[in-house]
Amino acid sequence: MSTQDQLDMVIRGPKSYEIASRALDQMKDLGISPTPLNYELWLFALACPQSAIGVEISKLVSDRRPLSDVEAESMALQYLPRLRLPEEMRETGDKLTQQLETIGKVITVAQKNAREYGKTLEGASRDLEHPQELAEIRRVVETLAASTMRAQRENAALETQLLKSTEEVRRLRENLEQVRRDSLTDALTNLANRKAFDDALNRACADSAQTGRPLTVAVLDIDHFKRFNDTWGHQAGDQVIRYVAAMIANACPQPRFAARYGGEEFAILFPNEGVGAVHKLIEAMCKDIASRSLKRRSTAEELGTVTVSAGVAELHRGELPSDVVERADSALYASKRNGRNRTTNAEALAA
Image: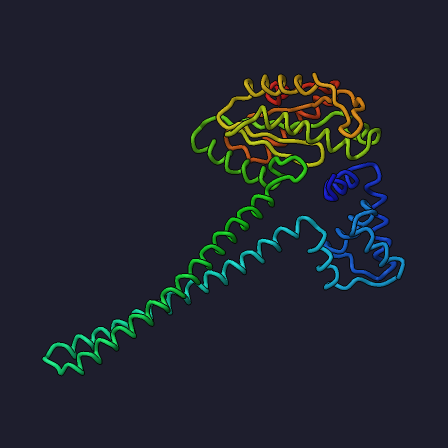
């Protein structure tokens, strides 16, 4: 489980307020300003004491040493996942800009060389317009030959440099695209992350409003996940999350859009599909998830079955994207209240 996932689990668990209070107490004791960045670092450290952030903050507390803004920013860029990706994108973007500037300079030099060679040809043409002595003709030809050879050498060098820069630009663009994809992908499951889902939801709602076609949202949550995690450990918990994510991905190919919404919760968009059909599909998928008994990969130990509760809601005319998610979430909690391992239709619930 990633540090971010551990943090999400802790700050939503029963000890969340205790950890938040300890963070503020430690910061106050050391005279550290409770800025959002400092507070986030402290939450990471207390929620995940074995992490790199936890070790650094623990040493800082032991030494009773204050944390400067520069140190906090450096630590955040190094360890906080949400800040590393933007930094990588900035660095790649800077390198891409440098290579594009190099290409621009190569083109400028090539244009200058072409103009100078053109002037040489123009001068030779004027010299040969009228009858000349053999020696003068020889001089003009030798000048042309030397100029041509020089132009060939310069063009070859420029072509090599241009090819090298073009290849570097291609590589940087691919790297930038990979960083962009990483920023929208959940590392544990390879599904889209919360940010990608929110962006896709806004686009899907706008498209539904424009075309009049239906859009249904499903929200799913693994039942009793905390108890499972406490019993079998975080690695087994990660295995369960990956298993459910794989089942969701298999049942929801494009244009459906599946994401890990946070912790053990998932969300799916169903463009052009009504809530009735989606309800049946989610019920069948949850039944499939619960039909298999999981084993610990390292020891083949039986972990038992996993069940999922779900809620589905269809976008209403004039409704905000957050509203349809909220209704699907309410339907999910109705499934939890009514015994778990079931799917609730928000439309039927409202009726």
